[in-house]
Length: 134
Image (cartoon, rainbow, N blue to C red; front, side, top):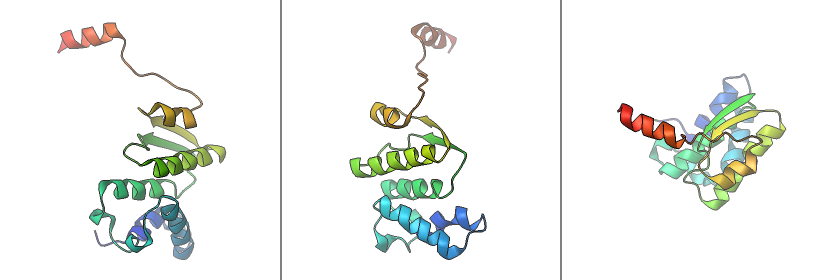
């Protein structure tokens, strides 16, 4: 609870042996892109609003070039500007070779990043069977 936002976001790179200064530079770049005000960076993210905390988590998730990323509604609850930044980050990760697996209820966001789409809506018969099984 006393760790600064900048250090929380930088931690995944520091844990992989990157210098603290270099990791903080990358963290600052991501926090800036996600429109998190610079005057918040030295505060712990536990003091932030839900939307600010979401952007901190997104920045932290994109600190490392992961080979696979699991995303659960990554653009939910974001304003249009930050939603666009997250879509750009996802497309940049894909272009760098990452496989992204995500849950998206937002069709426009899904279509902006998805190469394949699997509709997980239960078939009507399955819904009836489920209701009777309960």
